[in-house]
Length: 187
Image 1: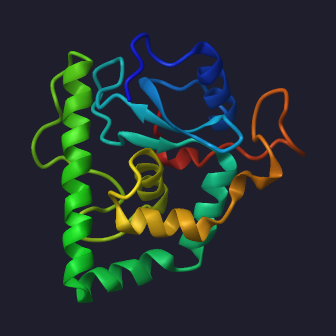
Image 2 (image 1 turned 180 degrees about the horizontal axis):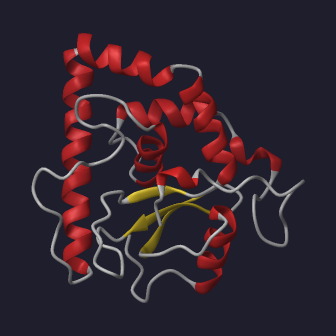
Image 3 (image 1 turned 90 degrees about the horizontal axis):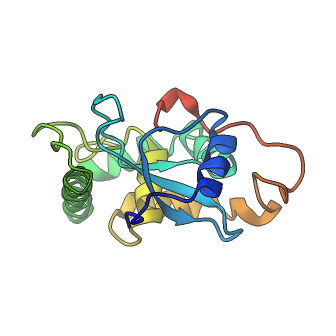
């Protein structure tokens, strides 16, 4: 997934437009929307200044982020967390998604020549015990399909956010969407 020379400047420009600010620490485009623009990036586990950054997969498309935000506002995280408590099989698959995330994040750090984050550093989205951020789970599901069952559910429930057309660039469809949720401060 890491691009040999890093992401293309054009992709970084799209991500900057999506986020409403310059991205930092982007190693690769981890997934592309059906409209062909990046919608998930892989971010270095340590930002260029050395600051630890545990979010490996970051949802950048503002339309996708808005769709996921609607699910969060509708209470889906509570429902998923309750299911984790009562469904041992789901809990085991979610634990496996957590372990996969940590393994990929450590590998990304090593490829970047950086020290992996310390053991015990959170993975993403509340894994492995709860659902805290559907954006992070959806980003993992888009980047690594089939690994995170709750992320896969969130992506499916979000619906076809891309149908309105590109969210950024010269072929952007409709009015400029709001930038992706910057409260997550991912780069």
